[in-house]
Image (cartoon, rainbow, N blue to C red):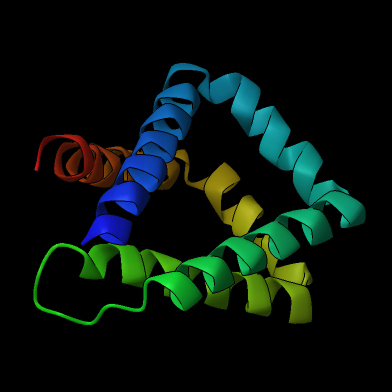
Length: 128
């Protein structure tokens, strides 16, 4: 359970900070996402980072139990799959960004879910 608590603190805190930052500064981050998707190098770096983080989480925390730590495992697998897909098909990053630009409410919904999941992990990490 030690690695679950550590990863819950780490991932949860990260998710809360990123979600709050995006929600408070949506116009700035909208431009950031647009610029990011136009840069092949940045898209590749982001994909590689997602791949590395996902692979790390899967290797150190591949816990499949009907308890809250499975959330960390799922996050790891999602990051790993995202990284693999975007490295193999980098054009998808551009298409996904365009979807968020056309449907800004979709981005807000995803960020709220990200925030709530982050808060849940912070609570489990720091207070369980």
